[in-house]
Length: 271
Image 1: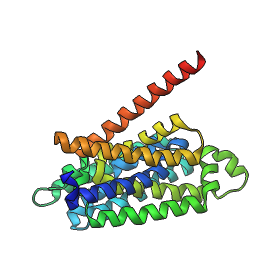
Image 2: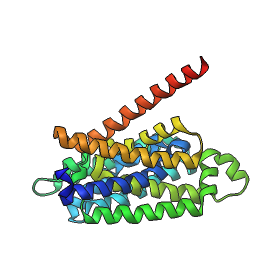
Image 3: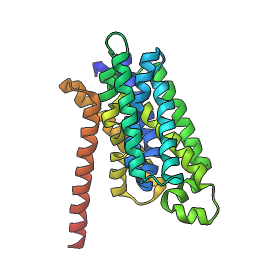
């Protein structure tokens, strides 16, 4: 294909692979730990960091990352240390981040040209800096899972049992919350705030239809996530539509296709 000769498309292919690796690991933890709602809250709260970054003239990705991590820690602390319910704490930081982002976006002189890409994503705008960020994050995430795999799995599946064994559950939760926040912000260029959480949940849901083994689920999540990105990019290029929406549409379609295929296979096996 002629499109493969262009640097921006090559960056998109590399970025989709790195993002699939990061999301495959982190997303599996999110799904098994049932943190989808919290992750959605952090995703939307990160818009506050983007607004602050644009207003201050700082790289909005960096400010969004700091803001998202602090919001994640805030939700974790409020839900464990106070009498505030977890869903209420999520709603508080969710709306706080969105309101701050909107206020500072309007206070910023001129027109915020990057706003649509942050909201809806455009993987074709990924540059070298984004690839370096994803690459370093991918190495860091893989290293954390390799070194602390059993601890992460214990906390993900049975927090109470992990506490009874006197494992460092709280520290693990804060570290994983930070990785979730950083992962979310690092994928904003790809699918945007509106759809970022989908990249961390739908490939994992599809993988869960194929296996219940945690390690295999991570592997399938990475593979499925990359396939989603590649097919989404192809559809985006052919139809000239936003790449973020195309990637998520493909991921949902593959999930439904896998679910139907599994049901048909189970029915034929019974007969």
